[in-house]
Image (tube, rainbow, N blue to C red; front, side):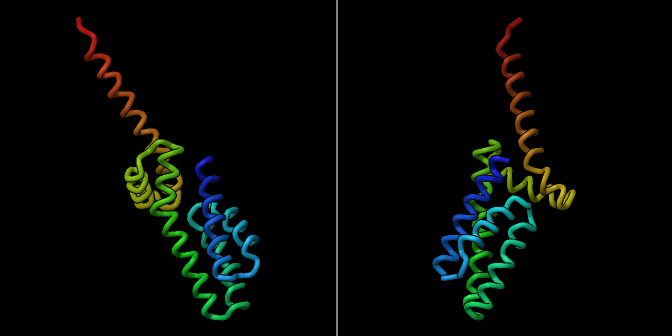
Amino acid sequence: MQGQLLLAVIMGVLVYLGLTILGVKHALLLAVIAAVFEIIPVFGPTLAAVPAIIISFVDGGATLGFLTVALYVIAQQFENHLIYPLVVTRVVGVPPLLVILALIVGAKLAGFLGILLSVPAAGTIQELVKDIESRRAFAGDVEL
């Protein structure tokens, strides 16, 4: 949960900065919405983008609307490929490559539920392997 909250804060700040640079009205409120919806896996960020995109199209026209769409797509790609693996590595202790592989395998095997459970399962398996290795090393050190 710490990781999700950290991701929410980071994405809220990124969205706020991006919307402010683009000149979208209500940037702070839209950034708070983005941060809150970030806690909902997979669909949350998409749902959070809808109000910002609508406001951009209504207030700023097609150019601002499409720039806002691009902002959210870029922010999501940045999060999915860089921020998320780094945060999970820091909080859960699972290496970024293992996180990405776990998410891919989890999605293929069990869909949405697999995405939710893949990183904790990878962390558990990693700890189990470390425990087995340490027991073998300890058993190898003892001479009979």
